[in-house]
Amino acid sequence: MIVVSASMKKAGSGWYFNLTNDLLVRAGHANVRALRERYRLHRALRGGNCQVNASSPYHTARVFLPLILGHTFAVKTHGRPSRSVRALMAMGAMKATYIYRDPRDVVLSILDHGQRLREDGNLANAASGLETVGEAVRYVGDLLDIWEAWRQCPGVLTTRYEDLVADPQRELARLAAFLGLDVGAEALAEVVDRYAPGARSATDRCNLHFNRGLVRRFDGAMSPREHVLCRRHFGPYLARMGYAA
Picture (cartoon, rainbow, N blue to C red):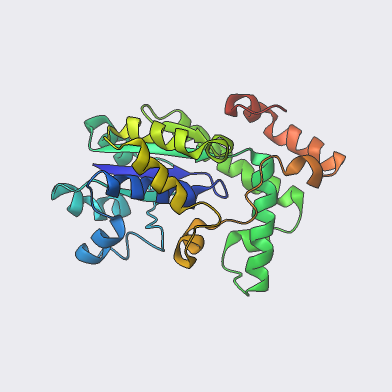
C-alpha cells in the first residue's frame, strides 16, 4: 500500500510526512528513503521528504514498483489528487491523508519563505516573488482549491495543523488507527519525541522545513486592513476548515 501524505504548503507537511514514515517503520514496513535508493526512484521521489507529483499519472506510476513487490510506504505531495490516485484508493492499494492550516497563518509563513528564497538567490520558486500580504493571499487562494479537492476525495484522513501542534501523540494515534497499524503508546511517544524541538537532529530539522510554526500568528502580525482582505478572500473556506472568521 502507498500512503500519500498530502498537504497544504507551510502547514507542517514535512513534520506530518516524517511522522507517517517513522510510524510505518515502527510497524515493520520499509523506510521510503531506503526504497528510493534500492529501486532508483530519485526522479519520481524528490528531496529529503520523497515528494511526488500526485497530479501526474507518470510520476505516480513510477512508484508502483515497490508497491507491486509488496511494500507499504509513504510519499509526500502538495499536488491535487489525480484520477490514478483516486482509482488506487478505490482499489485499496493506496490511502491518503491531508494536513492543512489556517490560511491566514499560511500567508505569513509563505511571505517568510519567499524572503528567505530571495536572500538565498533562489528566484525559480514561485514564492520568491511574494512580497506583500495581498500577493500571498492570492497565492494561498490557489492552495485552498487543492484543499477542497482532497476534502471531497472519499476516504481521506484530514488533520488540522493546529490539532497536531496541540497534541501530536493523539494525532499520531489517530493516524495509526486510520492506517490499521498495531503500534503501542510507547512507540508512538518515541516517534513524536524524535521531532520535538529540543530533540531534532540536523537532518530532521532540515526535513521539517519549519519557519516559526506559530498558531494564530496572524492575530497580532496583520493590520486591520490585512485582516479584512483575508476575510474577503478566505471567508467561504474558514468555517468549513474549522476556523473562526
